[in-house]
Image 1 (tube, rainbow over the protein chains, first blue to last red):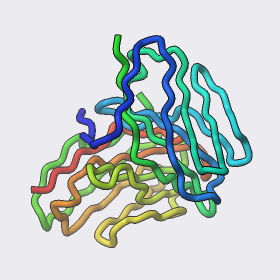
Image 2 (cartoon, one colour):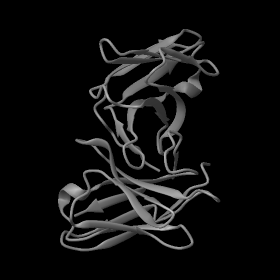
Image 3 (cartoon, rainbow over the protein chains, first blue to last red):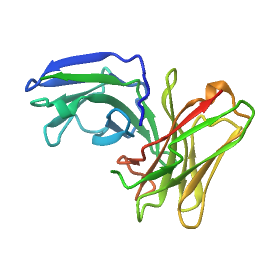
Length: 113
Length: 113
């Protein structure tokens, strides 16, 4: 398969280091904020979500931080591995009717061995 | 493998033509979503169906339509195609009506010449 060759901001990290990917969102009324990972030639894959009334949520090797004051979301990946190389998208979920995800522009993470 | 299948994988057609993209959701999932991923617009939500009914609509053009059949598979119909419709089209599915974790298929790459 192919991947979309988006002109994305790129974060380059050394294997084993921690990665921090940032995202600014626009809608204060969003109920959830979500991170997705898209590897080359594949569809996006859910990583973690956080409800709007929370500041922090941890998963396996990942932590999402939400700062509603400045409308900022971040994804921290601990001990980054080559398999983490991908494009990472933040998304907002409007739950008014149905389940509409609004995706951000994405950040490309490159892990150097 | 997410369990979501999409056909065809690639589609090349001419301006003015009509195409149909097909999606089979994961077994048991009632919600199907369609997304468009292009170079200039990123990943955009088009439409959601839940158990055969339209439940959320994004920036879907009037030339585009979708439906979900009783067996829960879905089709996205794109008509009067323009060069700008060239993109990756993803289908995703989830178990519920309102779910942050959506499972994406591998996508259909549409090229309009």
